[in-house]
Length: 129
Image (tube, rainbow, N blue to C red; front, side, top):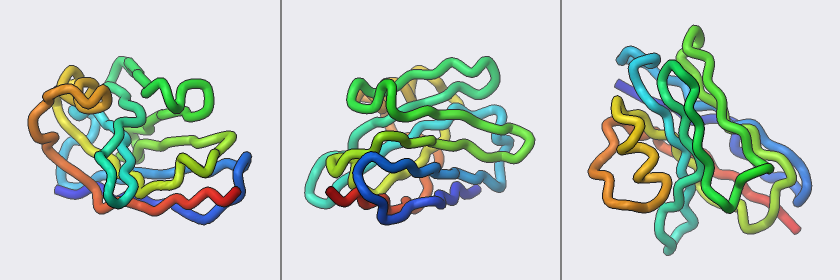
């Protein structure tokens, strides 16, 4: 059971990045996927989530209008398209999977959610000014 993030890089402010989250070892389309980010020394922040089949999507206010979450169940992969990047978007980005959309959404909102079932190891995105 594994999630692997990729696509992190060093980019200038205003540019774009697309992160990927590839799953293995479980039935990907049974799971909601969430993206989170964390700066060392700070609390983890929710970014966006997408439900397993009907495509229900929610975003954190800090990324609305700039980031787009999507998924391709045939490829067992979720994506986070990040446009108009800002230096404050610099963080390690993690994806997580859970069978409960409400639990993932609560985690995005930093509400008590319990432990999400599967986490990736993270990918570093650095935005220079």
